[in-house]
Every structure is written in structure tokens, then in C-alpha cells.
Amino acid sequence: MKRYFTSESVSEGHPDKICDQISDAILDACLKEDPNSRVACETLATKNYVIVTGEISTTAKVDYEGQVRRILKKVGYKNAETGIDWEHCEVDIRLKEQSPDIAQGVDGAEMGAGDQGIMFGYAVKEAESLMPYSIQIAHDLVHMASKLRKAGQFKYAQPDMKSQVTMDITNPKNPIIDTILMSVQHDENYDKAEFESFIKNNIMNPIAKRHGLNTDFKVLINPTGRFVIGGPLGDVGLTGRKIIVDTYGGHARHGGGAFSGKDPTKVDRSAAYMARYAAKNIVAAGLADRLEIQLSYAIGLPRPISIFVEAFGTNTVSMEKIHKAIKENFDFSVKNIIDVLELRKPVYFRSAKYGHFGKQEFSWEKLDVVRKLKGYK
Image 1 (spheres, rainbow, N blue to C red):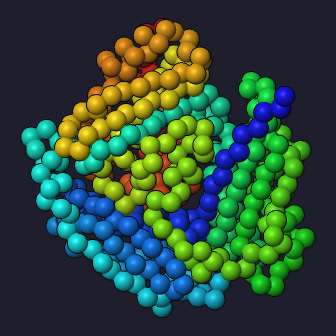
Image 2 (image 1 turned 60 degrees about the horizontal axis):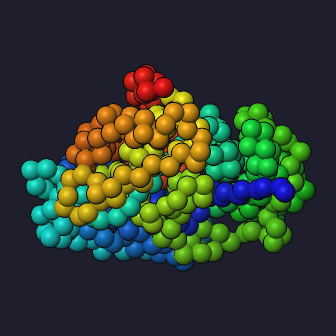
Image 3 (image 1 turned 45 degrees about the vertical axis):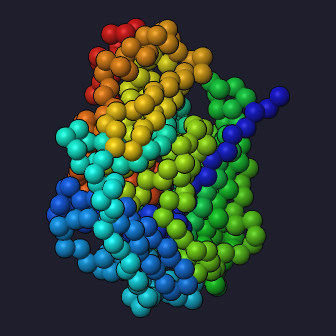
């Protein structure tokens, strides 16, 4: 029986991703001036209108409206008729300070979690990044398409894009690309054949070859036949609505908490990063080919209530050894997560597009515990 798995990604011009980027740009602006900023920033974008709301406690002086317009301009939206006009759209700032009830639990001698919840981290020996092929390729497709558009090399293309990759995983040791789907916003007047040929030959094929995979996959491009209206004009955008795109493309479980716009005291974000860091190092050390870690927290308490580890039968040592390795090498207390991963730095805007995992630039992707972990083999 054939087995397939599909993941999707979206470009920085997708309405939800616009909102993620605005929320994280505001977070970075706060952290740049005040590393102890408390931020829970939510953005909504619709027809030529953006509202920023949530709770922020900071000493930083931030031009919130300026951040909104800067991101819209950076993404490339300048026309209210096809997306949103960065210069003339209405921007509504509705922010208030964080509840003192939450601060009371977080600000103690031992930093407590900013909320309750469950978080998952995952790694697998597929792509070089130790991410599943389907989500890594999906990210790479829209990332390359966006770069080519910004460089003026992708004729007719507009900012809003989506990708979807179906992998044939019947033989897990020989994954094959079965289908690639791309929906790319385009100009009203465009050459359809030229547009589709460019996508296949200059985006899809190069990305498949980059991963050493086949190029004889099935191709779907703009299946409705037309994609002129996009961005916030086509769909309302919201912060935190692409949680599967942001993580593992459906390959791992998800606790439900979004990332963007949240400072690192919110374990929805920081603990998910730490769980990925631990899982990736375990897999890179050869203790398992596939690993998922679940953490759970209670608001105001500094350490997880529980830690669950699943290797899906791919472990090369006993699960007892893996549990021991995690316990002896990774401290999941909130303060330690923030310190070890240096999460007070303004690095979050870069995570708000093309996935939070699989990029070597981030501290939670470093493989600095591998040598120690190999001692458990």
C-alpha cells in the first residue's frame, strides 16, 4: 500500500504571516531597548486596515504604527486593489499593559511560566536540517519564490503565495516527491504559460535538486486558474493562525499555542524552542532517528510538570538511556531556557516567516550537546 504525507507553507506575503511578522517586529523593537519587556502582541489585517492589540509592559519607546508600515512595505504591498497599501492603510493601535496577576507568578525569585500549556519539540533524520522533507521543501519553495520576486526576477508575481508538498514515504529510506502545489498571486495581465514554466523550472526543480530528490513529480499551479486579489484584501490575516506551518508540517503533535508576538516568558514559544533543541541534539547524536518531546507547564511554576519522550521505535539505545540523557543535559526551567537559548535578544522577526525550525541561525538549532550525548550510546 502506498503511503503519502503532505505539508504546506506560506510566503511572507500571506495575510496571516504579515500579522506574525508585525507582532514579532514589535516584540523585537521592545526587546532591543528593554530586554525584560513583557509582550503579548496580536495583529489583525483586513481590507486596507490593520489593528494591533494585546498587552505590552516595556520601558522601550516604540513607534508601533511605524513598525506596521515598515513590515507591509518590506513585504511588498503597495496597492489596496490587490492586497494592502502600506503607506495609506488605516493603522489602529490598541495596546494595554500586562495583567499584574500574571506578572506576580512570572516575576518571582524563580521565574515562573507565563501560562499553562503543553509544547512539543521534534526532529527526524530526513532533510539536512533534521526536519521532515515535506515541510522543509514547502518552506524552501515559497522562500525562493519570494526572493526571486523581490529581486525582480519573478515576472508577474505578487507577495501572497502558498506551497504544498506531498511525499511518497512508502519506503521511508527512499522518500520521493509525489506532488508539488504552488498558488502564487500574480498581476492582472500576465502570460500564464510563461508564469507556470518559470515556477516549475526556476523554483520547483532547483529546490528538489537541492535536497537530492526527484524532479518527475506531479505539478499543480494556481488550480483555480486565477490569483490576482491576495494578502489582507483576499483574506483576513491574524497572528498565530499558521501554527502547523510554523512547526513541523503536521509530522509532530502540537500543543495549540502560537509563537509570534510573545516574549520568552511565554512557554508556548520558549519551551517549544527548547524541546526542539533537545530533540535535534538527541537525533544528531544518533540516539534515535526520530524523536518527539512533550513538555507541560503550570502558570507561575518554574519547571515542567511532566516530560514525555517518544522515539517511534527508531531509538538505537534504550528509552531509559534517552530519558537519562535528556535529564542530565537539558534543564527545562523557564529561566534556564531563556538563558541557554539567549531569548532576550531581538531575533524573533526572522522566525516569523518560513518556519521557526530548521534554520541554522537560531540558537535552538545549534548542535552543541551532540558530543556529550554520544556518550550515552
